[in-house]
Image (cartoon, rainbow, N blue to C red):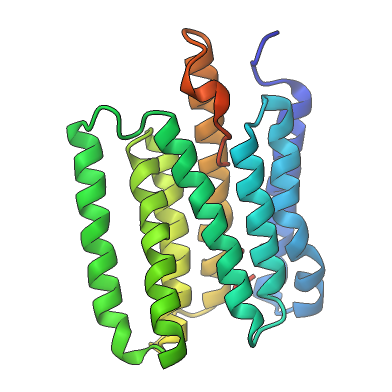
Length: 236
């Protein structure tokens, strides 16, 4: 059976993009109740969109975990750590997906630069944020951000589309982290957090799907077992 994109798959992806656009407009307008209704639907809509493209189980797991994170972060307080845990699980899925797909095998110059570069980004970010983060969040943020950097690095070592997606996901969560540290924020910070998140997830998903389809055309190897990777401030 052909794994080429179908009209149904394309319509579903357009549905995700349309829902994301509505959500971003609501964010700019400050209509928080409407945002809260739509937020838990974002990642399930993306999961639904990639199903016709033979989405691997790891991808679907990452999107379910992201939905848990998005939903938990609506409630604030202690639920923030639950949300962080959801997204940590999503990053484990992404890292597993890309490494099984051969992102680090063999360890090419591109892969080495991605790993080294994002390790430096993670170390610099945590060093700068640490004194200003609430004491109870320092260790969780450090551990979570290490997984986040892992997704960014392995996605960068996979292909350029997933690489941009992973970088945008890292940027989105870095903006949230600066808010936790009470650093000065961009105007309409929630909008930029969600824009980078939603586009990042889309690029991770479509880049991974494209990579899996290309691999299937020549081999039945690792990509056949791997899910495709595919928040509004996710902290609200």
